[in-house]
Length: 546
Image 1 (tube, rainbow, N blue to C red):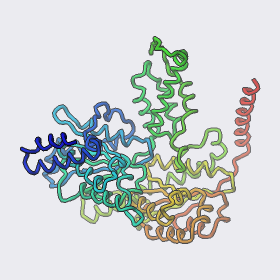
Image 2 (image 1 turned 180 degrees about the vertical axis):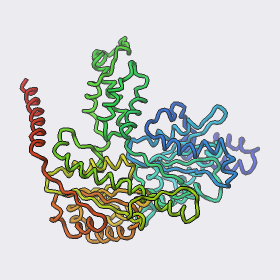
Image 3 (image 1 turned 90 degrees about the vertical axis):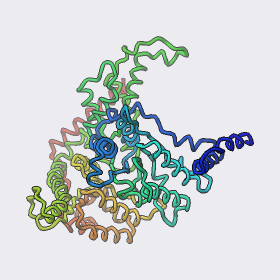
Image 4 (image 1 turned 45 degrees about the vertical axis):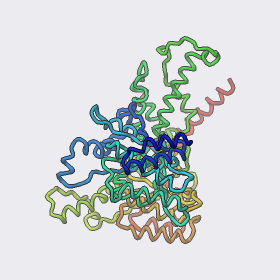
């Protein structure tokens, strides 16, 4: 240790005072952490990932290019209007939807032969330290390094662990880190051409002060991929397979993987390839030596994918959150009439929700004297009020298919690109550190950020009976307070409408409410469905007997 100190003294002897102080601080930090924290601030290599490796997120890619590419190639646009380009973006969405992959691809795709974009990646827990003040120092050092290597990107993965909501229940360490991060992102000192990206699965757990222009200017939601997006992900993953997958197989896989996230789709392709290896060369699993194999003899078939699907649990089944889900083909005839009635209502409500969300902007343009063409909805209700909160209840006797029709209706709303927020009991009660009242308030704040929105309440009768009285009053008050926001309430119930509690009936009937009562299908459809099911069961017994 004495030798190291003597070497440091010889190095800093001829340095200017400002550089000498900075060198001493870095040397002390290096000794206290063994060099680990300083090494974490080095740029990360991202040369193998680009936007071509991402499927189904074209709008996100275009938005990110505006933040990084345009300021570099066309600085005269921002200097001419005297505006500052966006320097922060927050990625949020379910796990495995491509948030981290998008950040890596951004740094690679924006780099050119003459100018490289440095990429700094830190996880929320990496910044925390047992020494008082070291976490804040690490953040400052990270931003200094990024400014030195600008243009650069700082990516905070799982940022909710680094900057949680500040409250009286939170310890002082996190509050100090959040304050330091706020000052670094939008303080008195300019951070130059440094773009900050945060990714999280729990956007409601992030401190609200970060979610404003100047810090995180934009928020990009990463949903579960649609059918065309899943097909593109499979095509990208299997692009170098020989022979390539047939177009029909790609279409069938895209339809069969509903509810899969991007990571699930890639895992499915990996498992299918390994199944093909086991089928083609089973001896390599028994031999302890390397054998000569020809990869051209390994052909991945539809059976390999079908076998892989049995071993993969998609994201929609790993969490308690209700996602959109189609009606199984063998059960569709039983609820087809009710499903058609629900679709007829949604086909009218979804365009109106979108028009109401844009009506405030149109009204502002009209008041400002803009010459741009303004097209308001032809519905006479919209000509007098921008308040549009339709309510649709799927109700009926127990076992009439409510649990099938609710997620199926969400699938239709997903296709209309409407923000969906589930409000079941698990959403309100899963966090022991947060009361149901606070969960309701946070949920309504999120819906105000995304317009139009749909509030999905499964089993609303049980939900209302379980909800505390204080939470009931808060829920009703929030609905009345946000009466001008285009929010649709979609609920299901295992009871007839007349058997529901009075407050629930008034909630549905209060504003453009409609109760869709379920009914038994015609006898010939029932016989046809059960005949098909009986064939499946009999085939299963035959296979077992053999």
